[in-house]
Amino acid sequence: MCFNWFGSSTSAERINFGSLAVIAPIFERMDLAGIFDRHLPKDPQAEFSAGSILSLLAAARLADPVALVNVADWAQQSGADLVWQIPPEKLNDDRLGRALDDFYYQRHSILAGIALHVAETFDLSLQRLHYDPTAIFFHGAYACSQPRDDPTVDLQRPWANDPPAHITFGHAAHDRKIVHAGVSVAIDAHGAVPIFVHASDGNHNGHTTIAEQFDLLQEHLHLPGLLLVSDRGTFSAGHAARCHRDGVAVLCSAPWRDYRALYDAHSAHLNWQSASYLSLEQQRRRQCASSLPQEHYELAVLHHHLVDPDRGPLIPCRVIFVYSTADEKVCRNTRAKAVAKLRAGLEHLTRSVAEGRRHTDPQAVARRVAKLFGKRSAGHYFRWELLPLTAEEQAALPPPARGCRRPTHRFVFDYDPSQAEADARYDGLSVLVTTAPRTQSADSLFSQFKQQNEVELAHHQWKTPLRVHPLFLKNQRRVEALIQLAYRLRVEPDAPQAERHTTTETILRAFATYTLDIEHQPLGRVVYTTRLTTRQRQILQRLDFPTPRELLSRTLPTHPP
Image (cartoon, rainbow, N blue to C red; front, side):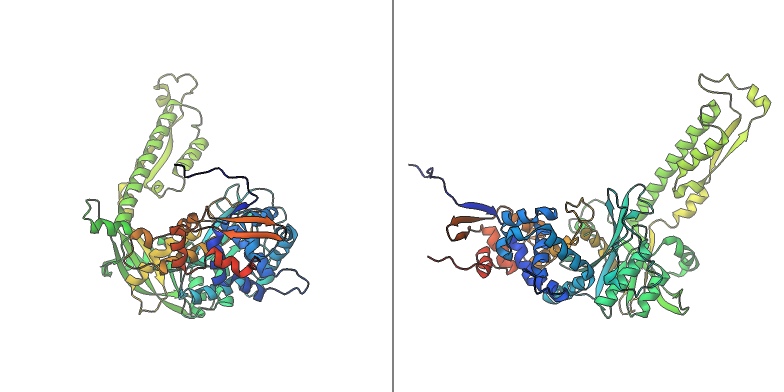
């Protein structure tokens, strides 16, 4: 018996609808096109609204990043033209470019509008934001990129008319051209959602980037009672004072060298308490009685004051000293490796000088030592000098080997273990500074600060080569995070762990092969949706999203019989 037959050829066309089955509904729930249209000027002669054009561009960026000149082909091949009701031939790069120009001058107000709408729709708290800047690297010639005015001169400048971030050489980028992108992220038990993004000039540091970001957050979002969390590259007394004047609390890690003297002055009287925070790995080790080391954190709080560098008054704060058993081991191992490497390098240099090899004159030796030490803190454990040899000492030396000359100096060095022991007192120690109300315990603040690593996930798109030219709608992670959040909110508490930790990547991959059938008839194209798999239907039901059939029936008329 045969169950399969070979049929005749058909005129039906199959297109890969793919992840648009999820992206289009999430855009509807975000009201993306509506927010675009409310913030952008209306053109009565425009055939399509800016919101429709820009939301389609965002879908292209999320589903399959392509250059502007290829968006039309993508829309036709994916079925996006059916959802957005924009013919592919209308998606030329001129129309797309004009929409992007309009978006640029209202980008901050649009991002804020999306953030507020999403927070309300998805019940996302904006009482705590984590901020972190990252570098975006560029290649090619950018001679037209010009520096912007110094933001420290006037933070109330009209941001909408601000020129683009200056693509230039950074402080540590060597031969690469960069800009800095600062992202503010809201984090809760279900994950991280990027809320706001702003690009700064490539030669700006963390103090400048957070100053610009904070000014924009206050202008467009103005979140009362906000706690702003950031790393030590952004911390300064000026940042804490600026936030304090606007009623915003900060929680920042601070450079240890700035608080080492304060620690020394109070170390004998600090009251250390174990922190409740444990990493997922440490929780696993305790749950399964693992033989691996069980690390932990300890906290000590010191009430302190910061001086407002602009206006002078003292700002009450808490300095939270943090001790990590794991970091202590890392510091000791790092120091031991650095000492061993420096000792080996100095011993090699001693032999080179004694044998009269090349590059052993005083100037060359100084350069070699400086290169060997570099920025290693272990360099100050060693002392070295070149001692000139007397005529008698030179005469007593054996004849130089081939390619060498008779040495005129002797290289000597010594290692001071007391210096290493003094530094070992600070192994595993770090410091946080906060102006948060004292009703928030140091333990809870430390647990919140440890979620700062979630911001790195929000930087994922910046860390990989962008396939879009020119650069636009850079915050792809914003929509990805919302899909993930919407899914996890509807997962039962007793569901398997894999289901409770489902990612956006997994969801979009489930729809990668979903297709639509297109039949060409004299009156036009007839679109047929194909059957969803069990997993695809389960995902859409859990997200409370319409099926592709329900989605397309809203935009396409029913085909007459």
